[in-house]
Length: 79
Image (tube, rainbow, N blue to C red; front, side):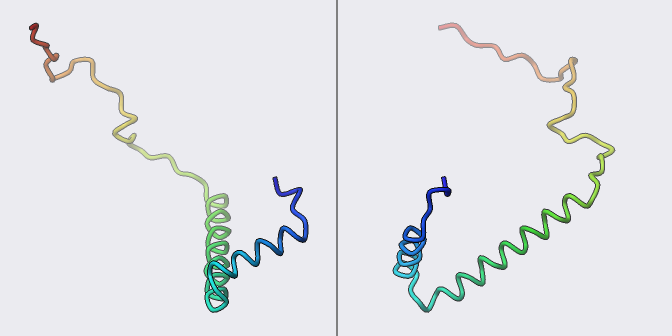
């Protein structure tokens, strides 16, 4: 998708961003994007470095359902 991006396309994108956000907002926008990328990299590095632990008790959605249910079967009234 981006292999056809030429210099003219990049300039056009920069002009559109400049028009949308304005010159005064661009430094703050670049700073927030940079911080977001840094946080993402840190989280990915922490996640891959830390081994996953297995919970001793399964999550409620993973627990097997009892076959001796305490709930009565639903009965539909015939009209």
